[in-house]
Amino acid sequence: MIQAPYYHQIGKEIEVFEHSYTNKIPFLIKGPTGTGKSRFIEHMAHKLNKKIITISCHEETSSTDLIGRFIIKGSEAIWLDGPLTTAVKEGAIIYLDEIAEARPDVIVAIHSLTDHRRELYIDKLGETVKAHKDFMLVASFNPGYQRGFKELKPSTRQRFVAMTFDYPNEKIETEILVNETEIEIGIAKKLVNIAVKIRNLTELGLTETVSTRLLVDAAKLIHSGLPKRLSVEVAIVEPLTDDLEIIEALRDLCNLMI
Ligand code: ADP
Image (cartoon, rainbow, N blue to C red; front, side, top):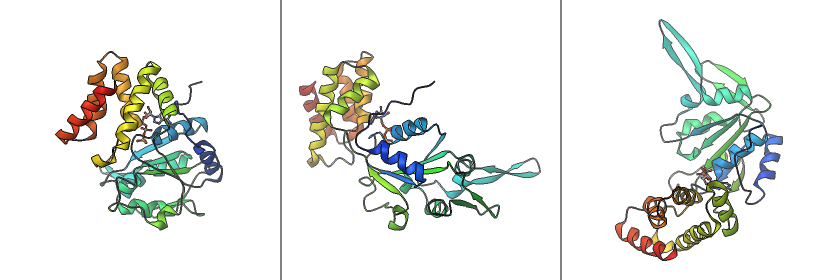
């Protein structure tokens, strides 16, 4: 049997997800990028033996992309189910990553799936599809990044069970790095110390700070033989900002720490 993708539990999210799944209540994960949201959903889908269909939402994502469209083949118009319709019919887990980025018609389209009706209206066919009993809707959104400009309305949020994901504590984050990359524990600890230090430097005004993902990337580069300082510079410092002064200050700080 294939093992579930590795996921280190941070709080009570596994239990909460299992109960949401039992009750088929939509699940919303809030939190910054790189905090394990997607990994968690992959892990849970595997654990529950369910197919997962992931949609990375962006500002052009429309309900048509999710529900489906007619395509012209020869002289015929053929209907093609979109990923949401497929998930609804097959009883898969649909994961709408960064849902607040999508166009407003996406939110309208999912409403009838997120309440007692559990049905999807396909306007182009004039049909209503009842969701398979195993169908579940999961969404993520990043409140910090979208602050003040792309919010989720209360009428949408209140259709979900919601949990906040954040950076794990030092012990767990070190374990994640070792597990993901087989890096030595001593180096993993140093990388985590760098992350903690930079996360506390709120005065830098970074849009997003060091995520677990950046640490994993740095650890992978080090593990494959790239020099430590260079790995930290290209995997942690450079992706964070384009401000040359901040880059230099962070590089100096990191060089002292690794
Ligand atoms: P998000 O979806 O929140 O942007 P991801 O799920 O893609 O973030 O996580 C980024 C990477 O960080 C993963 O590929 C994994 O290596 C690591 N990671 C973060 N949190 C965890 C965790 N709790 N358990 C295992 N790996 C994690």
